[in-house]
Image (cartoon, rainbow, N blue to C red):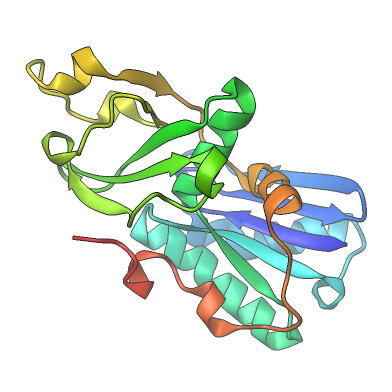
Length: 219
């Protein structure tokens, strides 16, 4: 199985190419915009491995919620490649990837995933791995830290707590467990796919939409 995995949801661009059982990675520097590098990065990783896009089995991308611009770049690229060669595409939730990574590292099944949105807003999704795997318990929400409906038996994780404002009087500090998690990347998506997903038979445009563009975020 040959898979291209693209993650431009953070300040880094992460690309992975899985050819059979080997995985090749490419990451850009922090200060380079994905829109300036992604096509060249994909071309380079394929040329270095003497591989053609037409031989892909499928494409993965981080569909957010995350940076609008970064996620839109990945969606546009997957649309172009997938449509051109009729290659199936799967968009994977950024919060599901966080839950997957934290569960794999800590074997904790009740996880609240928090991601910085804009201003004081946050994206949050609650996951119970035993009951629902990596489908959120309810709709992913856009809210402030004070609007989060706290579940005391959940572990709350984020890849950016340092940039999330928490009022010292907020119960979040005293009544729940908070953990940092390193950012997920294109290889995390490959691991997630291998355990949880499978490709369809052909390209489906609906699978290339970012979460917020597909109206799945609750306001």
